[in-house]
Amino acid sequence: SFAFRTEIVRRGDLNADGRDDYIVDFRGAVCADRLYMFNGTGGWDLEIFVSQGPTRLVPVFAGRVRGYDLSKGPGPRTMTFDLHGGFCGKAGVEECLKTRKITGRRFEFRDR
Image (cartoon, rainbow, N blue to C red; front, side, top):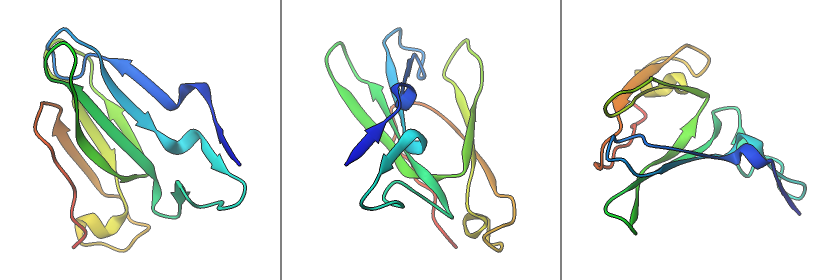
């Protein structure tokens, strides 16, 4: 069975368009039957959806992270992602930080 903490979804204006955007942080998700379905040694699943117009949300990021930090406004927010070291050409345990400005454009990190 699945269990989710209430803080699994964060809401706020990430792309500075005046509408709510969403961060789905699976760090708070647990599946008793498949313990590492959302979390593992490489981090946990994270998804970001931004608004495009009054009724449309588009996915701009889906990936596994070890952590993240969100800048304060005004304007589009910048997120700093803590990733598996492989995304920086390093060993898995080594620090790998990457930043992205949150807009309506999709992005991903590639393991080297």
